[in-house]
Image 1 (cartoon, rainbow, N blue to C red):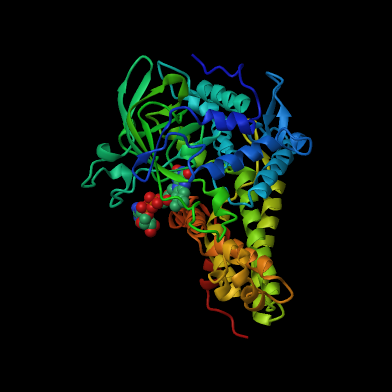
Image 2 (cartoon, protein in one colour):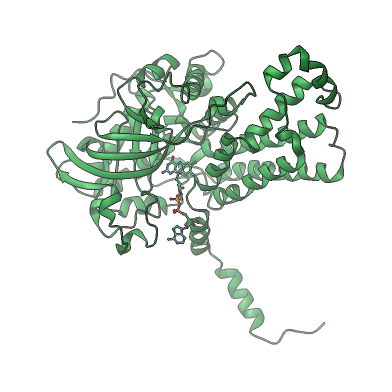
Length: 496
Ligand SMILES: Cc1cc2nc3c(=O)[nH]c(=O)nc-3n(C[C@H](O)[C@H](O)[C@H](O)COP(=O)(O)OP(=O)(O)OC[C@H]3O[C@@H](n4cnc5c(N)ncnc54)[C@H](O)[C@@H]3O)c2cc1C
């Protein structure tokens, strides 16, 4: 039975999103089960911030820029789920992603907008999914139905692609580790008429506790397996019985009144997922036992991350650059050559990124699956894994000790202290309130536990950068240049 998309209500509203999370999901945090993620202090900030952005989809200002009319139901649906068939569609999707990222200051690694492209690229590969036969279902049809279901309900997905970090001493396909794959990695233990029963764990699912659905597949590292029971791609509701999400230590909370403008709103949580005899219905399975279509998709050159990731990184770069500029002004160092050059370096990265985004748009192409894809972004994720750390470092170098030494809101409000703060903690031509809040923003980017989590995220979220660099080297065509060099050095080098 295919998932029913006809009852969907279209683009999510804030209230509907909050209500959808009160569904008995099993979320664990600090040794305790979370009864309601929408009111838990570690999660309610992000939940309500997402609810606010969802509501923009229905506002007069953003409705046209964030939604389109579904040809099937007449619902207004999120542009995140639009299947792009023209350049015009790609441009609309770009604007939608810009809005999501402007609203969230480029701080949401796994926003609802960012997960939709994963399903859209699988949609693009629907024929190769269908080509893998299974007596219970058609995987390609499942995916097409699932896309429609997500679009008409505007569902928020998390995704988990990796095996638990238990023993990396061998590649997954070698099966020579001391700890057997069967003990840890997610795999099929039984087939029934309803679906497959799976056991094992997956990492790392960002935003799982606040998502509607959990999409499971395999990354480039883990898709190469000898044992077919480990090859699977599917999506299930996050409240499916037997599925547990374990949260990491929150970075959203902070004692006192120091203020965390980003951390309190954008701690999207990262989770380990444990599957204990979980039933995955046949209509929710997109691939089973055959890595071929998943590998093909990874190597297709299709840009499956699309605009959301690109726009997010651009926003993040612009935010860091502007904060560095304002701080340099606020403490009177912007005129120094070295400081200005450092900010110029930050601008360089932001500009290179913008030009690359335009280049990807220019290189957009029609895929065999009938969808428009942005051009390949082969080296861009690797570039950002490197430059993000550099930009944070530059922000630290420009900001000095003010990054850690600032008064709290309670200090600012205290008349006994206020005179001292006005005198000794103000900036050049700016009040202490402005300067300390600006620095708190920089602190959240470069020092706080939220900022550090973002930094770790930027390095790892696209997969191991070293693996990605090697994959890039292996697929990078250098024949032309190498032949010329070999020709040049095949003869004595001419003098003068
Ligand atoms: C904040 C954050 C959020 C994330 N969100 C998501 C998400 O939403 N969904 C998702 O699916 N994933 C997510 N990830 C996981 C991310 O994709 C992985 O962190 C990444 O693929 C690296 O895997 P690992 O963390 O297990 O590190 P490991 O693979 O264990 O790497 C540890 C070290 O060992 C080295 N190493 C490992 N294996 C080998 C090898 N075979 N040969 C040589 N060196 C090796 C690595 O280079 C590294 O130095 C997230 C990660 C982070 C940090």
